[in-house]
Length: 255
Ligand SMILES: [Zn+2]
Image (cartoon, rainbow, N blue to C red; front, side, top):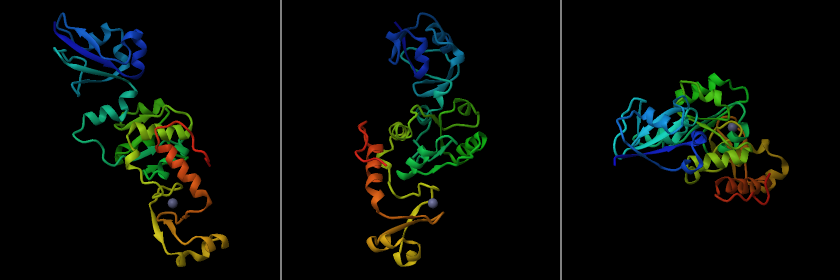
C-alpha cells in the first residue's frame, strides 16, 4: 500500500500518543489527502504547525501527499530553528554570527570568548534585535517566544537552557560550532577582534606586577581593552574546554 512517512518535531509531539512521538510514523494513503488533512488526522492541530518539509522542501497545507514522501512537521516557534532553514538552502551558513536579546548577556560573553561574532547590548529592544538579525543575517538567540513571532525573522533559535553556561553549550552543540571555535580572539566586553600589541606601546596602562611578569599582550581593536595570559587565564581556558566539550562535567576551577 502507498505509504507516507511523517515526523513531528518538538512540542508537536505533545499531541501524539507516546508510541508515535519523535519517530517516523508510517501513514497508509488510502485516499487522496492534503498534508493538512493527514496532519490533523494524526491529532495535531494545523494551527500549531508553521513549517512542513516534504523530502526537504517547504510545502503549503494543500500539498497532496504522495507515496514514499518523507514529511517533517515543525511547530510555530521551533520552525525558526536553524536546521529546517538550512535544509532549504543550498549551503549552510559558513560563518555563524549571532545577536543575543537583552536578557542573554552572559551567553553573549561566552560566545565571544569562544570567538563567535555576537552582538549584544543590555538595552537592546526587541525590534532592534529582530532587525539586526534580519539585516545582518545573524542568528537571533532568545528565550522569548513572542520575539520569535516577528515576521521579519528568518534565522532564530529558542534557547532552552536557563543557566548561561548550559546555554552556551547548547548553542555550540545545536550549531555544531566546536570545530569552528577560535577562543581568545575576540573581546568579551564589546565583540571587537583582538590584535597583538607591543608591550612598549602599553607600558603606561599596566600594573607593576603585570608589567614585570607578562610580555605578550593583545588589545581589542574597538574598545582597546587589554588581554594577557594572567592568573585568570587558566580558569578561562578551563571554561572554554567545558563549553566545547560533550561532557556535562563542570570545569574543576571555574571562575
Ligand atoms: Zn572590546
